[in-house]
Length: 314
Length: 193
Length: 105
Image 1 (cartoon, rainbow over the protein chains, first blue to last red):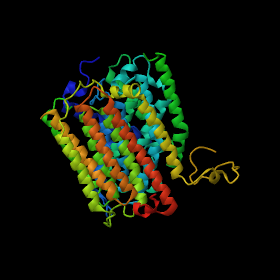
Image 2 (cartoon, helix red, strand yellow):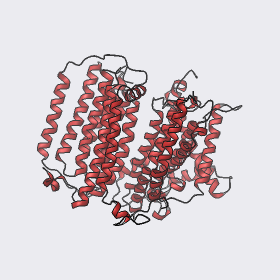
Image 3 (cartoon, rainbow over the protein chains, first blue to last red):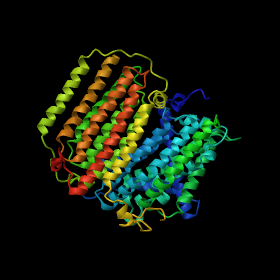
Image 4 (spheres, each protein chain N blue to C red):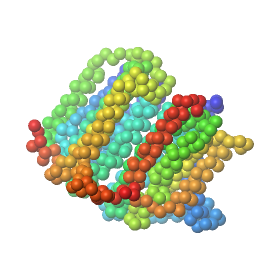
């Protein structure tokens, strides 16, 4: 066990918070650059393109609509990257987290639930038909993935015997959780794509409703929403690496490097597969979520619970 | 966090307390239904923040989680049922406002008098190292009956809510003699039938 | 500041939430707004339960269990409220409590 349990104890509060925020932004940039590389098929310049696009959005003049709900609109746009960074607060970095609570997994889930409200606000704010439709689509999609995602997190908690992410890491020293919880792992990663409205779950921003929630966004607002989405994907990839792929465990290399490599692998898989699948309609995903994934994840939790009783993880 | 009763912790809790009541009042003041819903969410999040300061991490995050989802769904219902969802045409939809205000203020006054006149007992024991574990062991051990009741109540709610909310039964889906091979649903769903 | 004073302040905030919620639940005409008033009352219960646990008996889980029960009551209230709203709206296009006054027994 390390001497200090949390990052603030090791580095001080402000440096630790800044470091986690920087990690979040870096992860977001990695997601954007990977996406660029997958889209264009060229790795060259892919790392610079997100920075260039961000600078352009920062300078762009804000476009507005007739009678928007400015307060709620701005609130939703700011909330998106904030929630993404807050969800990163419970992801272990070098074996420690920024925030050591007794319910890290629920914290992570709560940040993702707050995203429901934030994204709906982004859709509601501009007083625009397409944007609001996108917001509604996200809620419908949320109803589909929320329960399976919760059961996937419950499975991890049962396996580790704790809701702390650091305990989850410690419980995986022998065997990665992905081996005994494949269903939970797949559901978690798919839910990551779903709550970042990414890949096959991009219906809230689909082209058939002219970009949905992002239809009326411009300038800083668009930057905030796109950055929040990318950081959320990156943070969840880091979380998936910590919860299911053993986090920083691995031979030869130092722990943080292993965690980074696993996170990059999850990001690459998410982006590469996500870009190759068609967008699913939310009304279809709801039925699949409730009729297929809920029973499957419950079975998965049952299997893990039995394994815990036999002392498999001890 | 409040254990040491430090100045900044008390100040933070005081600000959150004022925020929770202020956004609670805002719920019934603002015209826009979306704003009313999210003012209520703000009130819940402020209370969740106070619970966080009281070292009730699990209850705080669960409050935030449940109430956010609830408010997001509520916003949909609001806009579905209210005639003036965005508050673009201010209108009042209240009845007996004066009497209600008297009842509300009266309830507050009675409670406040009780709160400030009772001789409160001092803390009877020490705080547990992990409040989440304490709660978990209680509802899976000494207080399991509560958990069982909650489970049955929620299950009954799911059934009753679905029965009340849907107007379609099996005869609508499978025909008068229940012989249709695939159900006639307005939304096809994602699974092959 | 003593612990008792902080407890009293927190309970007063909770009482404020109950008062505001009661006013809303009694004065609003729309069913959904009535439900929001009830939710505010329960919000006060959450706060009071948490404060009582911390300042009176943190070694016992009872206050925490009470907060869980209050959360469940909120969820049940909301689900049944929406279901009833949908049902009565489907039956007679009513979304205000005054228009359903004939339902009183």
